[in-house]
Image 1 (spheres, rainbow, N blue to C red):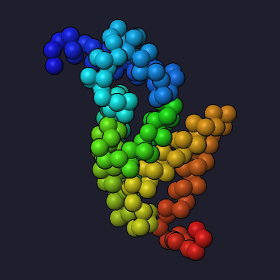
Image 2: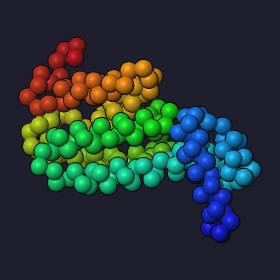
Image 3: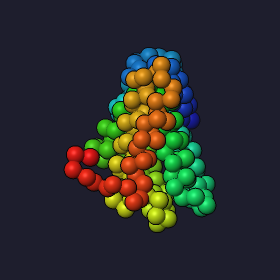
Length: 190
């Protein structure tokens, strides 16, 4: 990438990050381009659609979550490590209004720009989940895709209820009770 194209790319990412934090992921792409000092065509040359821009913006946060998963990989209590990482995911998804919805949508679209975020998170989470399952703390029928969807759903619910700051933790606690090994499992109507 030429130096001027690289500067435009970096300014677009910085302005998108700011806009997504302040106004959510539905922020105007035209405003992002204007604030970055480029035209909308330049934005689309770098990011063919909103999802590609979102994926690029969130890549740094994904790297932090992947690093955290590596730190937790050898934690003495595998279930606690998994829970701590899921809490970090919920916090991450709650940073930007609309991110949890975009991540949920990415599960159905492998070609999505958000898939760059989802795939490595799934791999990191799978390793933590496997350790918790091997320790006998989490049911064997739990899969990481379901956990990631649940965490995004919790983040979305918390986003829609800003007056209840404890909601995400309560919902995660409820979810985790259903994950425990030796629980009721899949009962009729459950």
